[in-house]
Structure formats: C-alpha cells, structure tokens
Length: 219
Picture: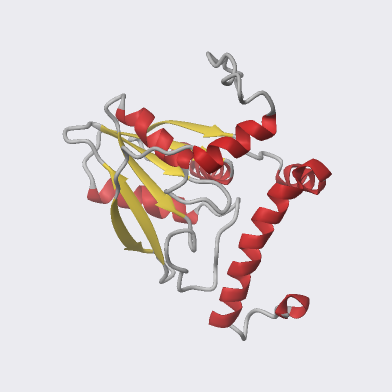
C-alpha cells in the first residue's frame, strides 16, 4: 500500500488537542448548504436501505459515501464530503447502514465493519439506475473498512466504472482499534457508542425476542 503525502498542515489554533479536533466539529459543525433526496431500496435479503442523493445536473461522476459507526448521512463529515465533491462538479450518493437512518430496519441483521454486502447493493443500484461515467468510493471509519473489504472481495471483478476510492480514519486492525476504547481518556467515546448500540439491541430484542436474549441488559 503506497504512502501518499498530505497537503494538510495543521488544525485551527483553537483545536490544539486531538480530543478537541474530534468533539468540537461533532457538536458544532454545520453544513447547511447540502440538501438530500431520499430514496429507499430493497436488499436481496428482504430488508431496506435509505439512500440520500445530492446530485448535480450534468455531472459525469458520482461518489458513494459510507459513514462511520453509529453515524448517518446527516453527520457533519458526510455532508462536508458531499460539499467538497460538489465543488469539483461531482454528484454524491450517501447511504445509511441498516438502522442508521430515521427508522429501524425490519430484518434481524444490523451492520458491522466487515459487512460489505450492503455497499455492494448500493453500488449495483447506482450502476443500474444512474448513468454516470465514473464512480468513486469514500468511507469514513467503519465505512472505510466496509469500502476496503468490498474492494478486496471484488478484486479484478470490480465494476469498471469505479475509478478510485479513499478511506479516512479506518480501523484496519479492528481488535486493536476497539481496545483503545478501554483507555480512560476515551471513556466518553466508549459510553457514547455503547449507549447507542445497547438501545438498538433492545429494540431488536423487541422485534425478534426468539433470537435475542438480553440477559443482564434486560433491566
């Protein structure tokens, strides 16, 4: 894997600590210029995915954007990417992983870092329903892992219209990355992620009580 040099110099003076670089944009960054057109598509296993289009008239290319753990197309970094590609004249298709849109998915499966099947469904839908000459893939964190897995699985069978891909903050070694959440300094992130995931597991247990035993989480 080649190492590419970056033109990024340094963050703004007020983001002088890595935690500030993470938390401040998450709470306060807004990208109000981006407006989506929502489309719901079916998956091969009978579930659904919510896709958000931000298309430019006459654009010859489209980027597929995959969000991170417990994110969505509404996250600031997704809309920021949409805006950045729009400035280059490229349309965008941001998609929500199962349960990450405004509605819980109807099947028993949620999502995970190694699940590339939904990204493949999105790409195939784009190829079949839209006429773009070029397609790009971008993933952030978990979305980056899904993107890399999709690319690796496709190999030489990758659709020819996919010209490039980029991933950001991607946990290539998931076990080691997850272990960092146990550090005291990362407690706020761990609690945030686990709080959301536990809520979803409880909702899934209500949908499929025969499949999920909450055990100590039942209280």
